[in-house]
Length: 264
Image (cartoon, rainbow, N blue to C red):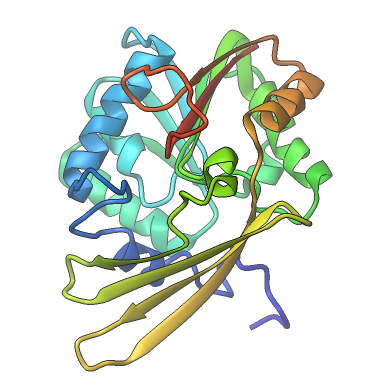
């Protein structure tokens, strides 16, 4: 293992087996709305189609695509989907799940900071707290430039996060929560927002039935609505819509989710 690997790297292992287990809880991630993983995937996929106003023939880039939840669900709807994912465990899981579902998304191993596609896609989706991984705003801006460059003229980016800064500052964000996993294990999530570096520094602790714990740390730069839109404007996006959920509810500073649609 490399010395002090990045938290999102394959070497460190936050993503991979640890994440696969921790992401499948009985409660889901919303405070007042319990959802299984299957229920979440259905609602999110329908929301992606609704918010992007997709008709069925579009080419979609899912990045990072994780273990393929959204890529596979969209492919089942008939969309031409490419998923870019750095983690080999997630990638292999996605390929297996796609084969089971009898669909053929194009899953590619790669890092979102190194995308080389040009004007090939009608939509890019970046969902579930998957932006801001890198240490500097310049690196995160480079990721956004990549999203812009892969889009055709008139194409749209869908950015989704369940970390809404005004809600954190109001003291309403869930900084310490416990979820019951489908595996029978227990997941504890501890998140702390740092006002100085504007990052959430967090820990996922999974405890198995024997009481053994495995801890993995992460650190994500959290952008406010205004900061993210400003970054989008810097790379060339021209118009924006902001929502609180997958049902097109207008954005609220009190909402758990923030979804931004940026048009090229």
